[in-house]
Length: 210
Figure 1: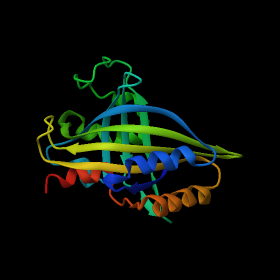
Figure 2: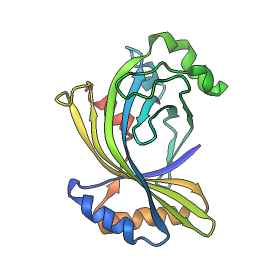
Figure 3: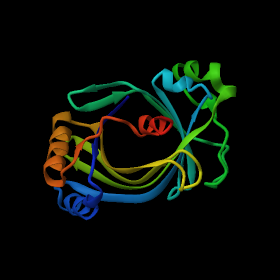
């Protein structure tokens, strides 16, 4: 289960965000990577209708493909709560320009129940391409990941297709007191003029079709 707060940032907040993160107590820089993502669905968008998202992600820094299935979940007290199943693809080539085959057997049964009826009809639906800068907040029993994403959601492989920008901060709960995570998000809204991001990247990708 994933617990996350997403915040939309002004495009001008890049430098202020990094300054805020670097001076935030108990927070340490971990890594930066470019993430290339392909979202899959059927031609009739059956996954969208189920309020689920299926993603193949290439992590350039780790040189590996990761498959992820997420449900829509719910927004509870400002925190997105949703089911998430994720695994590294074992048979994919470590190349970003070759979209691998989904390894459905690696998902647990409850995820396979969703995917198996449509597995032969899945096709690339849209793409996201962004740089992620990751910081870790660790203090006492509390651990949260803060990830700054900056890039594009686009409808085709070509960057001149229909697109929408990504400028957002995701704060993901690992362990501890969720109220502290909420306080971090409130501080970001005050310091960076951020606002709650109510639409996921997948939802914004599907919106390109409209």
